[in-house]
Image (cartoon, rainbow, N blue to C red; front, top):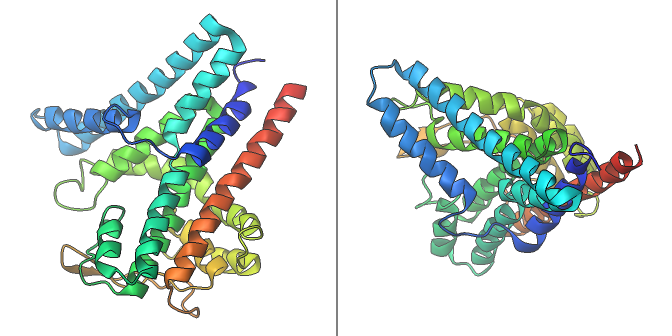
Length: 321
């Protein structure tokens, strides 16, 4: 088995690991190390006399190159020293650490459990760990809306995009995307501190998520069937409302989720007390509730299962060639 042909099998094993184990939380997790590297790089580069745009670009190039090269080096070393079997296992573990589908589903499930128990304080606390908006005064519908928006948007960043790049380029591809996505989440804000420094990271993340975001609508449509949600509306509303965000990619997953679940998303959200209006998605649908959030979790896990099936089929085809 060649290194390239091993990519689909490694991806399938990585998705199985993620579905079974979720994202383990410990200090030396590769994503935590990546975040620490970005924070250190920012501190160092801000002490230089480089213009912010150039400093942020240099940080982006260094972080992405380091993460991708490390993943590629570990993969090639495993294949060289242990043969195809060891190589596939090493690749699977590397890709697994770049996935966060199960972790995202677990966060949604926890918020849904709090809402079902009518514990809005706990629900707001759980929600604040996964969104940047203000949560202290949100009611049940607003909490459910924020959580579903997070699941819909991050179905691309946490699951579809890393799987897409892993299928094409193996673990180096998965960490190419993961490093860009982490840069965007840390320095890609449109505020005074990061408006220029974070430009390169944000634009790279947009570019790497462009194709995966456009796969979100067909994937959600197919996954909606086993998730017992509305596949027809997922397709129709996904295509209709996919460009309603300022971001070129974010609304694709959200619009498909809104259609599949029969809920409306978007509207005003507050960040640090400042209202940020967003165009409504699926405005004709009803406001979401705890039940809709539970369905969103099922839909997300159905997407991951569908990606697993695709990876297995690709592995069979690659092995036969």
